[in-house]
Image 1 (tube, helix red, strand yellow):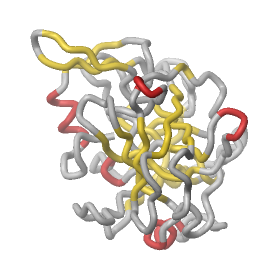
Image 2: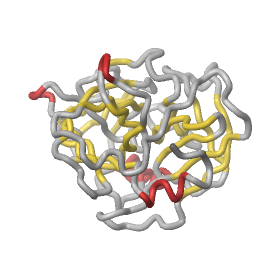
Image 3: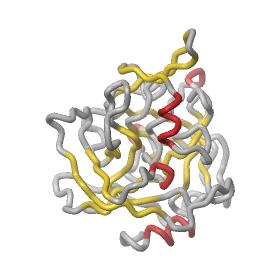
Image 4: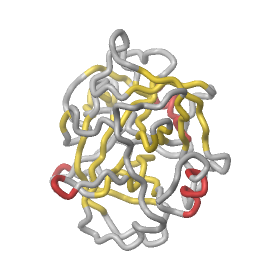
Length: 258
């Protein structure tokens, strides 16, 4: 997730103080083996705190990894892991080719902020997540729950030097509640306010899934991918819907749509 869509993700990391930690994805918990189809886009080199996850994404076909276009590192070849707790020396990784939506633009109405990594080899040990049917999220009720998963910052603390974002190279999960019915909007806005029992996303969760439902009602349908939110990661998780015509037009090049 980013401070705003216009900023480059890598530039954010250059301006933040980051340290390892194991607290929460914002009011969440370690995912363990709960969502093996959720993986991380790895940076070309470790960040100053020693962590590697630049963004998050989801396996939606044996060779297709869904993420966000603003996570583009400026290289064609990229590396992905599905390890719940990543260790550069021991975790399995997969190489693939980056494909971003060519219509990506800095527009709040529909930024086309979507991309895939086409992996060199099929991931056979993991069942891919599902995509939603066309325009199926337009009439959601205001109390709809979502399950957010990602490798981003688990906590934000304040200190003399400003805000510190804590990372641990661990996949985390949290549950949030829809703020308002989306209608024809390209976005889902999900509350992550801990005071109301919600959790959500932060920097590094960009491109990651927000599954429709939670708990016993959770589905493996990726309703939307994490894109942005408020700067301290406390209030709202703002996500790009993948049931819209523009998202589906891009995805149809790589997967069979429902």
